Image (cartoon, rainbow, N blue to C red; front, side, top):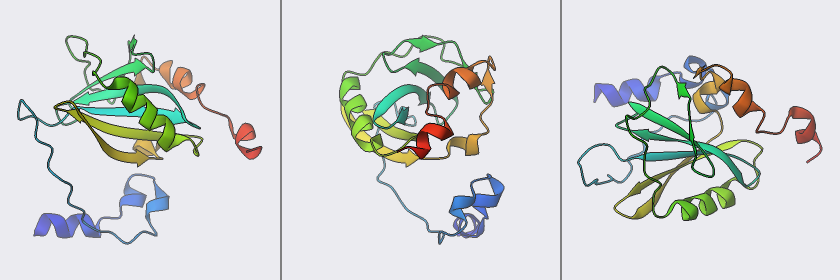
Length: 163
């Protein structure tokens, strides 16, 4: 397949400014299909964490078409990224949200900054991935003061050197 061949030969690390990927042998990994009630892409919950503490998250709907940001206490934040719109009505907190938070805490406990992703479909939590370089650090927030608001939630370089 031409598409798979192109993906395997793509210089992902250089293209997306995530050079840590350059030394990894490219592979195609097929994940289990997630069946949804509405037949659309599954809702994705992306928790930004530091040393076991979820700080905020964004919820992605419709294959990355709509994103809404929330505090860890599930308070909606008036911010957008990458020009994507917020949903027209607020997303209802999932029934197993606290369980997702608990899993995010466990999975992130050893890392100064990691994004822990889950899908939540048909009352089931499904682990997605751990991401250490979300968009290579190039996300543009609107309003732009959220760059500082979010950045101040994480340890600075000096505190990392003492761990």
